[in-house]
Length: 159
Ligand code: FES
Ligand code: FES
Image (tube, rainbow, N blue to C red; front, side):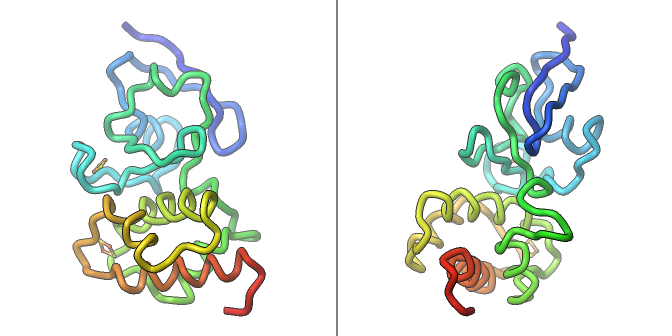
């Protein structure tokens, strides 16, 4: 059945039309005009499509619109702005963490959720938080370095 689903998207009211079976990633990349959230496996197995749903990382490739209604979604576009980037976004550039970059949006969402609950994660804790994010380019070591750099920045330490 077709309906309109209203929710908060990157801090602002949003709504999208669709059926109960439509999933968020396609609405984001299509009608809502936010293409940074990637579609990879479509089966909760790669992490490319992660968004924050009420602050928790969730795969948007299987997140039905009826489960989004009334809740708060943050995509990687909502973490920061070009004028005021999130420290993760700055750190990814500083560490040249991306290769093809396809995984980067999901990795930054997973890392943002980690840093929100743990401002000083160990390397092992970062690796565990990113375990659901596949990177076919093998750039995980640089991703972890970027998360460590962002954590230092968020703690007000020199990088
Ligand atoms: S596209 Fe959602 S986990 Fe792979
Ligand atoms: S940088 Fe290419 S998939 Fe991760």
